Image (cartoon, rainbow, N blue to C red; front, side, top):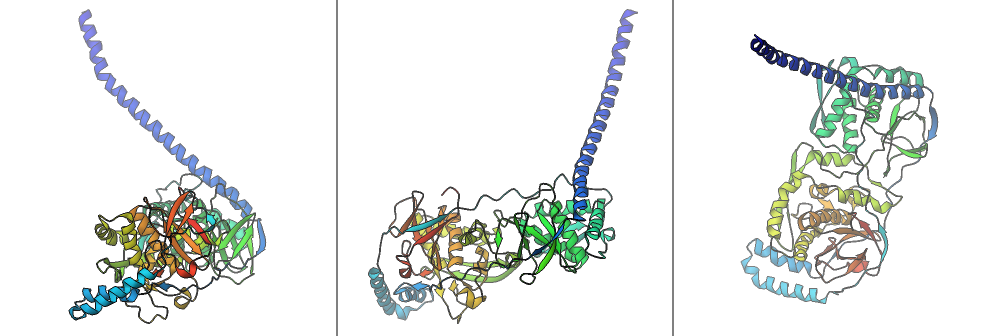
Length: 539
């Protein structure tokens, strides 16, 4: 009997234990879900509590400020590009061979000899150039701003609306329950409408915007453009309602902004550590805020000084590739005049070009020279490098670092066409920005390939990418009065003019001295002091 009792107890344990385990598992799952939901609510409540406090200040914290006139890109001494003596004769031989030209062999040979004599006449120096200033490399791009706390989605969801951002499709949940009307621009009116943004439909809108920023790897500037496209489409182009929601989404994404108005029009001004050329700005509580719309110089605006916790200034660095959709345009074949075999056919991405057209030229640390570093440190788009880098690597295979840099330099040098008389040649053409654009215009690397003309700074920026990416060498930008070139840190000793930076030797490489070899300084720049712009922090 005792044996049966023990067996019965064991049987009950076997049957009951799984039930207890299942019950414990359910209880654990329920406890975990309760904890997760509580955490979500606390996240949401924390941000919304801060937002409620913020809107209280919006009612009263307004003060009139006068706009400071935009800073213009400084005018510089105009430096003409130079062509190495005999360069035209030297390249003529290459092209006659490329296109057949059998009857011209004797003439080509004669021209080649003449070119070689001219080359020998050139002053070949191995001088250390004087450096007056070394401009520090930009600080690493800050971590992209984030919301004060995690944005929690609501199940009460609107349908998705798609909208276009430089040819790239984005989508955000937004519907009629997000529409409203601003009946004035008083602090109370604006605060009342902002309080409405604590509803769940605006959480979903904000959540989706942040997801799109992540999906497309949008920089701060691209994200601002995305929010602008969204609000303009749904609320009307630059309406006060669009601006109010733009400011809400921007600030709740972690960015430092302030509302401003002139009595009729609502604006958003943004804080940035980058001084933007051509943009009016206001000095508020010890910081510069930029108006990204256009107003008259000196115009006064009422600015709301209410702050939101842990807000961060907008950065204009673009240290990672952004994922714009591809829209191929403008196929070009660009050929080196010194080596016609170094030739590549390239298409540009219209979407990237359109985006770069919106980008404000800027500088940091109160130094105008820093403006070129942003362009040179923005990586070339994958769409572009996939087209040309494999072919370039193949043609550079087996060359010494000096030979490889020389091939890239000759490819970028192209020709001059100051009068813009023949823009259809299959090489880079030099022309002044003022004659093409009417003002000084800096190019990102892709833009130098898209547009028919570029100048010294554009060529140096493009070449700096090619040398760093394909040859793996450190480079610096070298500024002479009115002229920008670059210099390369070779692993072995090479001849030519050079500068010394922090104990390292950088040999001059000037893609505007057309036909020149690495190490040759443009004659009109000899004896002039240089400023060096660092592009990598380890230099």
